[in-house]
Image (cartoon, rainbow, N blue to C red; front, side):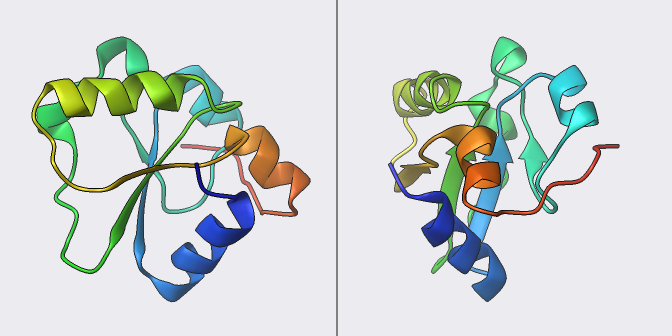
Length: 104
């Protein structure tokens, strides 16, 4: 688990690949700029974008639960890279002052 403050620093530094595992309707209402939506309900580890060397994979959801399930699916699929989960999900991000915007 990584704090939203740390994730924001990584994003601002360009070293994070942020994957949002919430459902499309949740993302449409609110999203973090630059995040990639891979909904847990149809999560496919093969669709995970390549995480360039030196960058950090960060999963997030609404409150921090579903990203744990997505992390388990990645491990089951043989993913061997580091997996970071954002503590508190988008709710924690907002509480830490992180900006959000309506999704596409």
